Image (tube, rainbow, N blue to C red; front, side, top):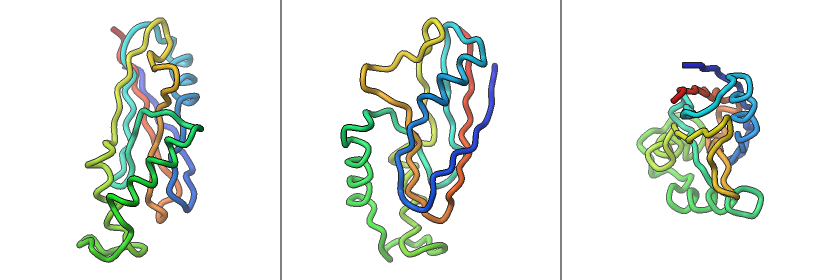
Length: 136
């Protein structure tokens, strides 16, 4: 299995960060043909989603997460900025992994789909993302 880790700077605001080009670069470097791309975020407060970006869906996801997981004082997990406990619940809704088929070295995504890092944790502006390719 070919695997590597990249660093992503997400900054101090909640973001949906498109990783699709990074994944495509990884697959080229791996000389990938057919197989599976597994993407993993080794963080307790970030997740991965496959969704459309640029047409508002990414912002809609952040809005939905704000409504489902308000940044307020209800959370038992109390360290960090106000409401940070909600960031620790995020991976239960937006998992820290995604697996995408690769056919002929190309991600088998739908027309408008992108592989995205979802990070609502404003306390941690730098994330690691691991790409692993399992040839099939």
